[in-house]
Amino acid sequence: MTTPTDALAAHIAGVSAATVPEAVRDRAGLVLADTLGVIVAGQGDPAVAATARRHATGGPCRLPGTAALRAAPPMAAFLNGFAGTALELDEGNYPAGGHPGVHAVAAALAEAEARQASGAALLDAVIAGYEAGARVGMATRLRPAAHPHGTWGTLGAAAAVARLRGHDAATVRRVLEVAASLGLATSATASLRGGSVRNAYAGAAAQNGMLACDLAEAGVTGEPGGIAAVFGGVVGEGFDEGAMVAGLGERWLIPEAFFKQASCCRETQGALEAIELLLAEAPVAPGDVAAVEVETFASAAALSERAPAAPIAGRFSIPFTVATRIVSGHAWTDAFSEKAVADPKTQGLAARVAVREAPELSARLPAERVCRLTLRLRDGAVRQREVVGTPGDPDRPLPEEALREKFRRCAEPALGLRWEGAWRAARRLDALADLSALF
Image (cartoon, rainbow, N blue to C red; front, side, top):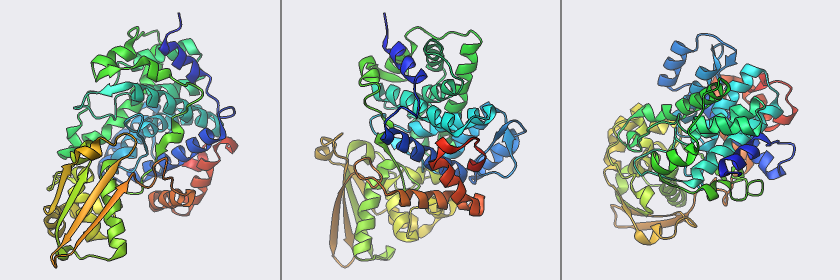
């Protein structure tokens, strides 16, 4: 009897960029390029850089954005994932409820380097890993206390590595069942309270996904039905095996990816767009703001902390995101630095931003993600803007030039003029005999 896990494994084993629809292949290239840029930028995070200096002690894998550091494949996978989430710029996927790309790409880059794989093989792995992770995520009703990073992404990483190793469907199944037991007990509140350990979740999942392949090859077995057991009753509160495999080969989840332009949680970016639109109509000085009121859906309204304790908490705070945009004039990485978080003017403005859930907006999910922002000025003027979705969403796609510019901003500080060649290489993976241009 063929089980849903059998079906997913057979699908992953057969993924080929040469045969998937053009839209899937193109979006996979964009996900790889965007994630590569974010990894390069994240290498500049002090904690990432310090960890790399300590643990990148030699090996076959280059680390994107570093001049000379090399690591063994498992550590390279970890460092790629760590860097790729440190600045909260990585892509995501609403149906999956998380960020499949960074988990799959972090592991795939390391394994491809170790195997001296071609660009085409890397692209196959990214598609396979994204699909596996996103489908398990889509089928999972994650516990509210769990952060999605580091959970089902472990299966995405494992699938990417298994695809690069050319495993057949039976072996992929064993790999996935082992990987199901190697996820993390993540905390959704770690980032809200300033715990930057959250940035290590995806790295650990990428490393453990690679380990799952090694263990399965060594004869280690997973729990039969382990995916449903773990994601239906341990990390998750329910798991729909039918949803995991519905439309395999017809509905691909990677074209449903969203991309970010700001260095903060996606759920803060409705309010961010609303304030951007209001400021574009007429600039406002921080001292002119009497109050800001934000009404939105439940999961976004939870990001209401007015006094974030650290940069990562600022990235998960609607009050701080709105305040730092008004004070600094942007929402790029520097707007969420230690200095920005400690800035008295920004702190004072964030204290005047109130966030609440509007039940009628929560009821419009998942079809619409709505944010309503009211700006009250000290002269008595009141300005309001409501936005639906965010630029970069699947139904509000960014032009490729905007993603290319994001890549430049991410990669140019580390790569210099080589950033453009890295972008072109990432967008034309099929033509690469080796991956040197990406590094």
